Length: 169
Image (tube, rainbow, N blue to C red; front, side, top):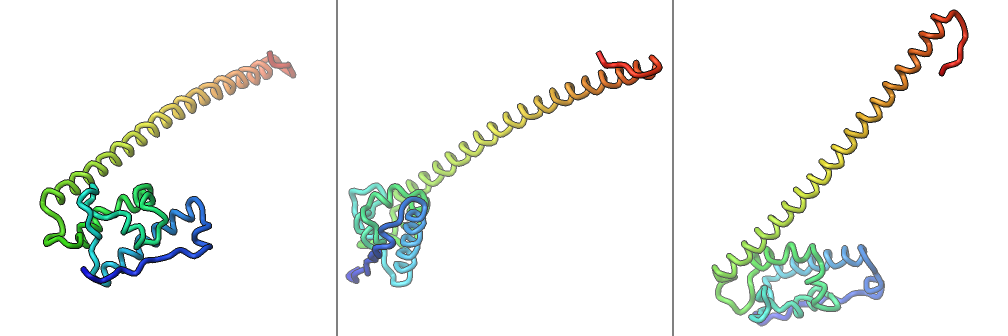
């Protein structure tokens, strides 16, 4: 397309943000850029040398990021960018993606999903081990309490059978 995409610029207050606030701002800027691209009919800028097939530096300028590294570092953007490429396509191409590129993107997202599933299963197994440890501790506490109560009941019984006050042994 010959249209020029309007680049976003950050205010000094936005540039001063750090940590989670800046990450949230990057998500908002990316979402705004994608929405504007959809509204105005833009496709991602082409770059055959990039693994995604897009010019990440140009996309970073469109979003208002300082550098293209933001796109690579932000997990929210990484999770969404491949699907956005499929939806919006790449400029100067007759098709949005070739079937091979489309298959690669599907394989990558499948790999990511499998990785997430494995992490969650590992987390579940760790939680189950913690639960088993807590159940064992609970049983030990109950046994100790029952032992103490049994001793106390014997002391009371001995006191009553002895006919008066006695001190527990």
